[in-house]
Amino acid sequence: MGGVGEAIGVRGQALPDFRVEAARLRLVELPLVSPFTTSVETQTVKQALLVELAGDGLVGWGECVADPDPSYFGETLVTARHVLTAYLIPAVTGTARRTLAAHLDAVRWVRGHPMAQAALEMALLDLAGQVGSRSLADVLGGVRDQIACGVSVGIQSSAADTVRVVEGYLSQGYRRIKLKCRPGHDLDVVAAVRQAFPDTPLTVDGNTAYTLADAETLRRLDRYRLDMIEQPLAHDDLVDHAELQTRLTTAICLDESIPSIAAARAAIALRSGRIINLKPGRMGGLLPAAAAHDHCQQASWPTWVGGMLETGIGRAANLALAALPNNTLPGDTSASDRYFLDDIVEEPFRLQPDGTLQVPTAPGLGVRPEATRLDRATVWAERVAAGPPIGG
Ligand code: OSB
Ligand code: MG
Image (cartoon, rainbow, N blue to C red; front, side, top):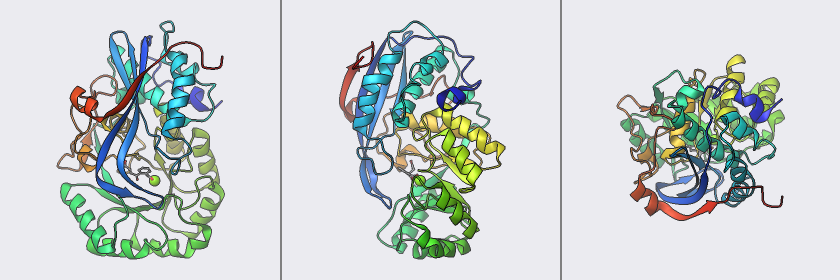
């Protein structure tokens, strides 16, 4: 067993059968309110591929988190468009009415491409949830109505600038600060932020920029009482993360290293850290991410829901996942205005005075694009044909 089959479990099984009659793909582009710099790159715009599935007089939406380039993850907008158009969407469109599990079984044979798979799964879950009048959080087994929110702060030009930016977010009510870091932009920045905010929950994210040779630098971070150090080492190296964890008192949280349920299980078995950042896109969908959540819960590894600068569509899905019981740490699920001037959903996500976001309660994702803002953000849209996969 493994992959989607194992992931389904009982989740989603009570939903009624449904049919996908037609499908579209669309690329949207939204300027970011401020540039976002990690150890790998600087982003100034967000591009997202949206999946739109029509059936039973309803529309299900999915958001793909693949970026234009493969610097965070191996997929790109072009590979995701290809896999969705050639294989995934044709396998679920124009078929007989059937269960969610049957729709997902029809795409299980496609190996890899978790971000493309997750986008299709999100649209199927949105449609199925609407047909069955169940919210996504309810389908996944959510136990929370509000999600405590942190914010992921990109690399700034100086430690003083970082302190200023952090102060702005804290004054809005964010409950945890994650500082992007890289070799040479770590100890000084963390020291300055920790000195300015002695009690704020603080973490760092290296996005794979370090090696075991940097263990001494990372060990010096122990004194700043960070809640975790996220993905310091290479994206595919669970063994070195395990070695590094033995040398640190601060918990290691894995992000890039967890592209599947199996990877989560391997990380737990190897003790490659103590925390996992759940991202549905990186893990092949909400159901696999929820299954990995269950494995972590059994192993007493806390989890939390990260982000990929999603529009309100993907944000709604992340919040539903964050409602699961083991997600006990604040997420990177920030409010719409932390990213965009004009999010594409009808009701942008707003930070509550207590530093939380509300989990949507309406059926399916519980959010819908607003037509005018969606049109304005659309770069292209195309119909995707039903039928056998391209090439047979
Ligand atoms: O490493 O968690 C990451 C954004 C894009 C790609 C990778 C990461 C991030 C973030 C921002 O840290 C999370 C968010 O606010 O959506
Ligand atoms: Mg990360």
